[in-house]
Image (cartoon, rainbow, N blue to C red; front, side, top):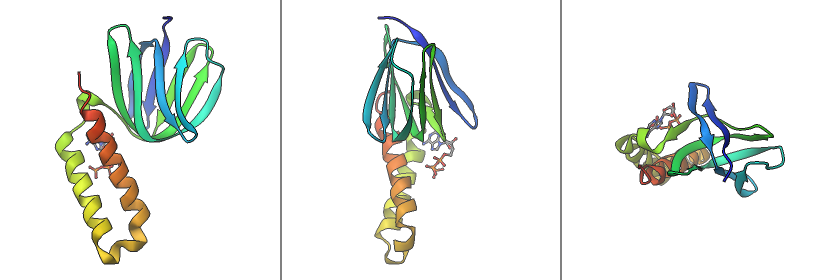
Length: 134
Ligand code: ATP
């Protein structure tokens, strides 16, 4: 399989800048797999995992929304937050999940439901991705 450049960038800096054979990401319209030579596109991403395939195996990242940009020479994931599976603090994600669940359970929290749901989604995604450390 042919390699191509992939960057994963957040406001805090570059998380990944290497060559891969395939990028799999979750767009608002569903999962997309990008190989070398894919048609150019820009697609909004949802909270989910991004999988990067190399000859040596699959690398997992958690991202919390952003954009996937496919250009003829390069694929870029521009995300609000992105963590490699190896850098995820599992205890922190579990604590964030517990906090979000407590907020959702509290009667007076109804106005903040969307925020808590999103925080819960981010935490659950990080916990899932942390399960794929190499
Ligand atoms: P928390 O309540 O634990 O801060 P959060 O979902 O509110 O979680 P974010 O606002 O999405 O956190 O992220 C803030 C910063 O912290 C980002 O740089 C993100 O990559 C990092 N981050 C958040 N949670 C984790 C985690 N469990 N492990 C590693 N980095 C994390």
